[in-house]
Image 1 (cartoon, rainbow, N blue to C red):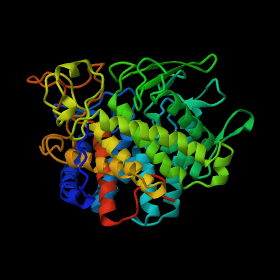
Image 2 (tube, helix red, strand yellow):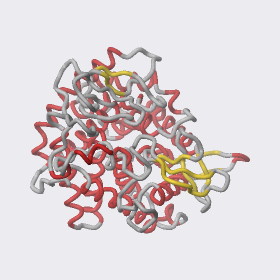
Image 3 (cartoon, rainbow, N blue to C red):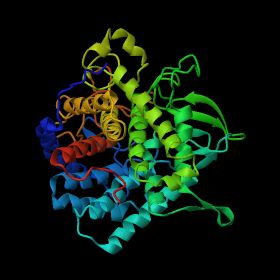
Image 4 (cartoon, rainbow, N blue to C red):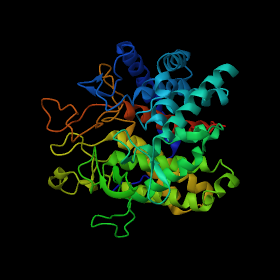
Length: 459
């Protein structure tokens, strides 16, 4: 399990964060120089070069959002220009993309970050430009909410690109699109001019995910361990009943794909922060604040505890907690992760996502219900940062286009590159891993510099 550095302070990470941004700048420019407008989106690296191989174009927002984060951290106008021009010139079709659940990944990372910077006074106020960003976000959230499957209990969920039977754990982190759209006063218009509340769909999706994607050690099945996560939940669309867990990118439905675990942890922690900005009145008709927050907090803490228990001492997890090769690795949870082992790959992208979830959950508890858990999660998040922002995870080779090494995309499909002298994938990067490492670094940097707390929903 993670060996938490209980005395580590955010400011001690500043030299590593500054070095990360220095390295990051060159990577962003190299990727932009190699990108061909209209070509498939960069997804992950092969022998150090970003290449495209997506289920959908779900990583485009991370490409341009990274440039915006680089400006946010370093005040380099060139990156603001790059991020803004690419967003306005190339992201419009993602706003109305009806075939994906990933709107928060693509559109909040771009239009959302630009809106936030303007509201924070970090870029000049331009009312027409702000209206453009907000219109994009309104539409994006409504399109995301339209991917709706009704469940047997009268609620429902946003279904994945696999179809109306499929709920992905990932969507919790991408639900920020729906949250912003509601916050901006938007609704989804349905048949016969039905006004469909985006808040209702957000809360119902969060409840459905918490019920079926997250386990709580209550005997649901023979593999019910508290905090374990099913990547995909399958429903019968004829009657809305849940049928079984599944996994697209993990080892099995009954093991935990660690990036799915990280999406859940980070997504619920962030939604708890957003709910704190909403009025009691608007939450009352959905069961009330206490009930809604209880569901989200229970899911967040269960997954946080599982992550801490099932991750090696330095905070970097292997790609799936039940991966078959782990049996040959001895007491692997009692030592730092080894990305160069011969049996199973680590997934640094899961660490980048989970670390932000741990920090946000810790801070949320510190401000609402101080407890030993609050400090434990916060310090665990800093511990992961301390590992992730240095070698062998920080990519210092100027010829390598990735920022964070040892990320995994799709192990079951065999999409990850294995170097000739290696037995498992390692040494490569992913666009989501790089983006979330930058977002994580910016989050901690703002804490250090006593800047406005980083949220997607700046009012």
